[in-house]
Image (tube, rainbow, N blue to C red; front, side):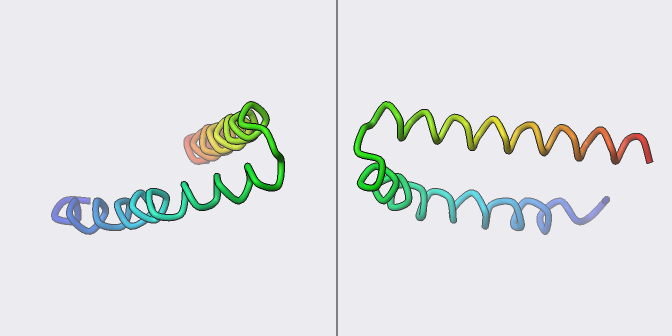
Length: 65
């Protein structure tokens, strides 16, 4: 909405910086649990693909409504 760009940007940046802070620690925990970098990166890729699919599905359903 007009005049709310800074609020929307700030709301998004909270999640971006949260990922920057928590991502490496969560990756390290996953690596320690799984034991190989290949599988850990594969898991990360699967999570990213599922997230993208859910975002695309939400966008499609919002356009259809």
